[in-house]
Every structure is written in C-alpha cells, then in structure tokens.
Image (cartoon, rainbow, N blue to C red):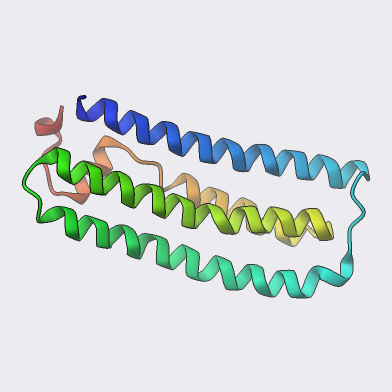
Length: 149
C-alpha cells in the first residue's frame, strides 16, 4: 500500500472521530435547548473543575506522547516502519484530545451551561489542527515530500 493511501486511512479515522464529536455536540445542544433534558446546576462547579483538570493534561500529554513516537520512529530506516509508529502516535494523540471534548459535551448536557459548550468547541477546534497529512508526516520525519510521493 502506498504511503498516500496509508495517510488516507489515518485521515478517515480522524474524520470519524471528528464527526462523532460534532454529532454528539449537536444532539446535546438539541436535547438541552428543546427542554428534553433537565439541567442540574448543582453539578456545575464539580464538573467544571474536573473538566479543566482533564483538558489541561490531555492537551499537553497528547502531543508529548506523539513526539515520543516520532523520536522512536526516527531510529527506523524504512519509511513503512516510521509510518506504523506515526499512525500509532496520531491515534493516541487524537484520542487524548478527543476525551476532553466528550467530557465538556457531557458537562453541557448535564448542566446546560454554555461554558462547557465553549470549552468543547475550543478543544474541537484544537482537535481539527491535529489532522494528519502527508505534509505533516514529511515534516515530522524530515523527509522531502517529493521522496514520499
């Protein structure tokens, strides 16, 4: 399988994770705004604190783990071996960035507070910037792009 096809498979995983978050966000907004879910204001403070405790490490740790995979992959000679570690690193990084979004959406669903919605959208935007591309792969491994195509 060519590298461009393999990158495409990782992009499909990325799009599936992104779509899941967006669909969950829209369903949650619909449920809260339609009145089908009764918000519980008493949960706001604890959920907000926990949400911040999840967001901060996840945003920092995800890229750190990814860089660890990149460093391990740089010792490999073959591009295919590098890509296997790249794919693993990307999936772990995406999962760690996705988790706070899901928690923020659940916080919004339980409390109806738009603060959780803003946090979820913010992390969702950050998630979008982690989209895997052939260019990012080439940049991370210092491989000329023409060599990969």
